[in-house]
Image (cartoon, rainbow, N blue to C red; front, side, top):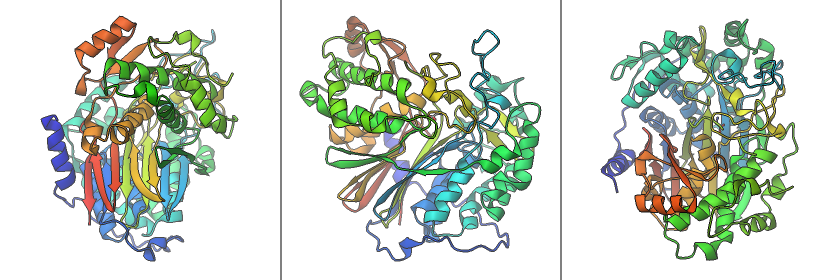
Length: 577
Ligand code: GLY
């Protein structure tokens, strides 16, 4: 085990709590949320626990649990905190997915961004029909209508136990009083500043950020205060909406009407049985839940071929790449926003269909890429950033939340006067069917742009239960690497019986149909050179990638939660009594 991993394990579980967040009194009067079931629930775990992207979010969770909040209160409070302290991916200017297990029932909340009302299928094409480079990635036209505040409002209203302003308070305090900037954030800021130079107003807001110094965001504090005072309307109507719409005027498409009409949606999660567990995961417009279920089940179907094959050996990587090839072929063809396109979810997760696909795997050599057509009858890129956190409370409820502004610092646009970093989620649509997005993934018409439509995502917040009790809460950023990363960690834990810290820290690799026979590996844990050589002899090409996820997971064995934050990031996990 690397010393970095050992260090991370020590600090993640034992890290000292520094209560940097202070409460802000506003005098706003509100009612307790309708759902406060945890008042009558007996504690079933020895403690609550979180695995989150930074230490400030962990402190927030501790504060919320100590006030008697449940997993949903903590999750909502973490989301607002990360919007301040993890501004490269935490957000209120983006969107995401929340998978919940509350009172032994599964739920899924879709608060993904939507295309503006005046968006059109060809809005990123020039008059020759070619994609205009960068237009869906930088600046105002890249921005989808944000969903995070609506999502948090929905979740907290339905399941939270604390008052709304209580869950906003830690974030407001961090925005007003500031927080200390660490080296990873500084590094990401520096890169973003170069990327956005001359294109957006990024430096106006983030130019003064310095490692080791306290960074304050008064505009964002005022926006969060409006949300604390007025609920979701504090973002989608009134002053905040006015400021966002004004900043868009003459540059982008989002209007006050776009904001007012935004709605988060409760959807039926993907439910599947695997290895004695029930998987609860993300349905469309995520491709991730279907992808994860297909990966896990195909591997189980191929148990004879995987028998005695050592983890991360050449044969193991070849078999996994063969499975991944088929999953990505389906992803490109069949997946999009279910409100606009009939996604064949039942067929794609059907056991017989998955078995048939697994039988196409060639155990000797890579299947010809062109021959791996979508199985019911092309692939798409995405940004690898995003952030995830996992939460369980002592009453046995769990939240798995992944949210994003797409690339680090989204479109690079901060809506003037709000401090809100706006997303570049429009890049997750296929601007032109057959042309790869920033993750190198290709899309079909299922994911073409239309007003109010949500772009296809890979975010895969996932919960596993056994005998109606939470056994694992897991997720990660990583664009198209999200579900291949989660798949590898679950496989490490349940197929290879690895302790959670090792399973999360172990090497990860990724294949996604295109580019042909290319396997991405990571510098954090490079693959064995002999294994690489053997696979190159089979026809594979290897590419090093800078980032392969930031898993935040909690495993529950018996009645004790064990959280683990990926040693690749600045995440912190904590058990909270
Ligand atoms: N923007 C990354 C994702 O939605 O998967």
